[in-house]
Amino acid sequence: MTTTLPEHSAAPALWPNLTEAVRHADDLVAALPGPGDRTLEQRAVAAAAKDAARALRVRYLDAHADAVYDRLTGGRTVPLRLDELVAAAATAFPGLLPSAERLAEERRRTQADKEGHEIDQGIFLRAVLRSPTAGPHLIDSMLRPTPRALRLLPEFTRTGSVELEAVRIERHDGVARLTMCRDDCLNAEDDQQVDDMETAVDLALLDPAVRVALLRGGEMSHPRHRGKRVFSAGINLKNLSSGDISLVDFLLRRELGYIHKIVRGVRVDDPGRWHSPHIEKPWVAAVDGFAIGGGAQLLLVFDHVIAAADSYLSLPAAKEGIIPGVSNFRLSRFTGPRASRQIILQGRRIRAAEPDARLLVDEVAEPHDMDDAIERALHRLDGEAVVTNRRMLNLAEEPADAFRAYLAEFALQQALRIYGEDVIHKVGHFGATTP
Image (cartoon, rainbow, N blue to C red; front, side, top):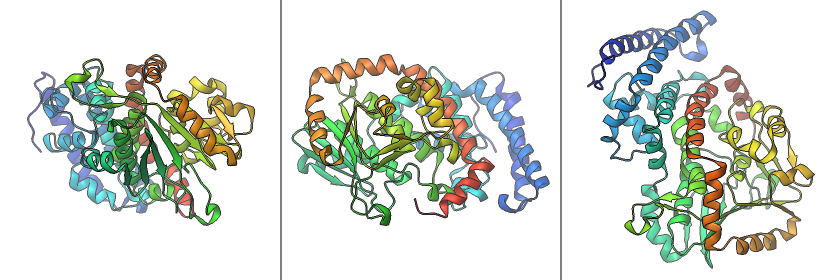
């Protein structure tokens, strides 16, 4: 296990200790049964060895995160996305992060039978995001359009339509209409849905013919909601139980990718945009049925939210055991601290018909009036002054450094949560049921 160390005086002392601790933990874990078959004593021994290595990772990155990041990004001249960054770090600094082979092997296991190597990615990304130099560069890199969106952009600008697995995007009269179309699972979120959503958001922002965008759920084929529109059931708990929800490609990419692009816009390199490198547009969300978990989180970044009178919103974080994305950062701004604790800590459900729903949505429409209400909202937000003013509102309400500080801690705490015994037990139950 060798690497070229960052040029810091403390590196010779820390790096050998870290690599030795990693080697010891790996050897010890390899001699034990799989996580699901270990005795309480074996679990404690494995946890102690992992904790020793992780404590040294934290110390090393506290001292050298900027040097490591600069080495990986050519002195912050190369914009690497989250997945590219952790892959590059694993190759350049063996032992600092799990290798691609180890992660691929881990991905084949259920959540209950994983070793939790993603926690080491969380440690690394927390250190990077906490840095006032590396953190903004990473966030800025994640605001750039994805290669997939750039490949699809000519088709979209020509035809005004692209059909993805989880999202359909259509352009009519200056409006990009994004329809979530996972009709069999109530628009439950997973890695594929995040990839499709970021692609669709990029296309809406990059197409010069689009002036305003709408997000709505499509009609469902799910037996309990057949033929009805549904906004989102949140994270796909079956996929989390089976080990198919990833920290980097879902939980972090979702927040730093398409959701943050809705807030800040997509970053482009164009000399003509000297006044702002970001392309921003107003966004409307329309909630039919329900917005649960991640669906409710989304509403906090939209400029106008319309909810059907028979719909409801909820953030069942306590029930699921994980952190509801950036809601803990944003929700109090809308509801105040007491209501945000009721919603997040106690699972309070907000029905669109009750007065407190107006803290989270702009208007409530009868189900048969939703289409008309949506068109009126899109018309009101179609204006250049709207774009500039929403930018200033977002700067005032969600300062970039405050967002970065939250995401830094979220990167680690969410990694720890998805491997918590309580979460594994809960999602095992949810995973055995239909969403």
